[in-house]
Amino acid sequence: MKDDMTRILVVDNERELLDLLELHLAEFGMRVSKAASGREALNLLHQYPFDLVILDILMDEMDGFEVLREIRQAKMKMPVILLSAKHELESKILREGHLDSLLQTIMADYVLILQDKGMEWHLDLPSKPVPAAFDHDGLSQAVRNLIDNAILHGGGGKYLGVRLIPEGDRVLIEIEDRGKGIPPHETERIFEPFYRVDRGRPSDGLGVGLTLADAIVRRHGGVLEVSSEPYVRNVFRIILPVGPAASVKEKMEGTQPPPRTGTIPDSPESS
Image (cartoon, rainbow, N blue to C red; front, side, top):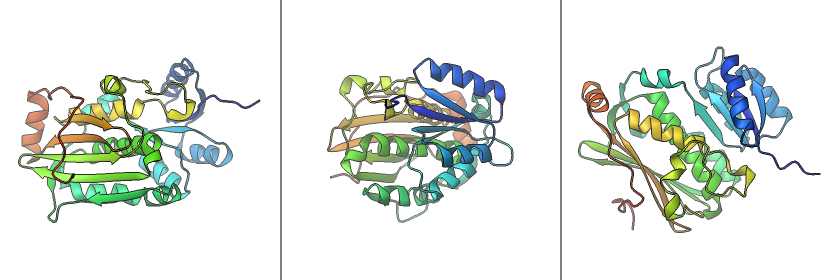
């Protein structure tokens, strides 16, 4: 008899957190395996099939990003969610960097996966560099979670688009797919922890990735919006303030981001 339970591998070098995650996920009918290190996780991934991997970013020997690189190089196709503790997220240091370079690095990790799935993809960047102050690891995690979500839920549309759009004192990062989309009444709830749009499909993931992406974007003083036109254009849009680190940090600490909306206007790049 076929086992239809979703199989999840949780990787964290803190045993207490591993046990807590196992108990919580088991309540949702998930079959959970645990690994206390990146090497142990990779060994398990080569031995057993998993529907989802949850990785802690900060681990000894191999951190979450190193494990993720190994997974992608091995052409493993399951979605991966990167976690970081709340107090770590809040204490991240903003550093000057280029958002266009960040997106190029991220997309390089997905080329083989997209080719294997027969998906067309586009990375649209401005002709000039886009400097900004941001938490490199955190924002990378948010974008990767949105891309994983687009591949997992929108892969049927066979298209992934990633765009970077500067707009004055803010910048937009768009992740687009042309899959089945999200019903209008679901657009707010998808950011709730462990919420799934289609509960009838056990391999649809947990929704944790969207929750984390939303939290990271809000910690940057930004907002994560969603708009869905099924099989035509489904977009998750990150809107971030740009400027010197001190200026962005002031926006992060002194203001609350605007509420999400279910409808967002077409981007300048869209037709």
